[in-house]
Amino acid sequence: MTPDENHLSISNLGACKQTNRPIRVLELTAGLAVGEPLGGAARFVIELTKTFDRTLIEPFLVCVWKYETLPEKHWQSIIEACSIPYYLGGRWRSEYLLQSCIAGLRGLWNLQGYQPDIIHSHGEFTDIAAILLKWKLGARYLVRTRHSLIEWPKRPALGRIFGHWIYPAVFDMEVAVSRGATDALNRRMLARLRRQRAVYIANAIDFTRFKFEATDSLLIKRQFNLPEDALIVGTIGSLSRVKGYDVLLNAFQQVVAHIPHAYLVIVGDGPERAALSIQAESLGIQHSIRFLGSQRHVEQIYNIFDLFVSSSFIEGLPTVLLESIASGIPVVATNIPGSREIIEHDVTGLLVPPGDPIALGKTLIQALHSPQRMKLLAKEAFRRARARFSIESIAEQYTTLFQHLVAAPPNAPLSSHFD
Image (cartoon, rainbow, N blue to C red):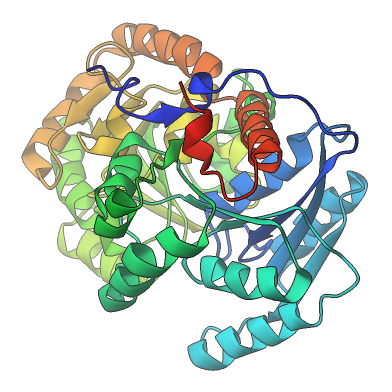
């Protein structure tokens, strides 16, 4: 059985009669503060909501929290410009986790006068909030999308309770953005007993955001104190242990020894920032490393990269790889399930074993010494990714899923609609 045959996907669904009005979908996410502190999942929800065909889907974007940050205000202005109704819940305070969760639920409880057909949630705590919102608002169906390979990594007991035993019973459909995450959902005992199968709908980006031509790469290099002739290896993500940045720094020590004008640019922030800075100094490569922190306009920063690297140990389906490909940047990534769905070794990029700084360093050196070869890999990666991972295609797949869900007879599992 091929991977596609082993997973339920929208291609398995037949034609569905359209409803006589748009389907009201409440898209539920943590917030709008993309980049600080939220990441790719929050951005995906925004892009998905923007892309829906309003004649078929009537979206309402609801956030559990308001962060009161500049990134949040930036995305508010974009959503307002698109005439998308939205709602911000309780205030998020990172130093008061429990109080923030309570504030978020209280904020959502103030929602009234709106009855969605479907609540579609994205995230660990957001999924819990969706269950309460269904009862509060009288929604007909609950759908959740799992964006990561491992849920509740810091609280595995909660992951077992909610993910394994509660969600299969209360959600009408579960979606996963990668094949590995889909398999994980389908292995749960209660899902097997209920003969429920998750649907695979890949992660996606808006390819029109990214351009191959640099607007002014020299200006951006000067802005971040980078030499004009520097070879730049870039990476973007939260500075957490799961991203393997400590391995990347050890690998980059080899790179600098062979290519002195190579620089590593790290975009993002997180709990490991201080430790990574100390590590760079102890390796003697601090002058070749740039920690840029969170950046609002990453599209411009991609244009200064000669190579993108992902050193992660675990990923769902990483949007940063898609963004790199959309920008025409060659990719070196760790050989993990999520990245393998995007990168085929020596065809659309290069893969290395996770946690191996020697292999990673050697591969980065080879890639920087072979720009023409890497450019060909990047071109093929773009061709494949544009067809599979565009936000337009994924929005159409979710629309089809929602149409089949609302058209299903009462108490009939959606899986009965599959061939």
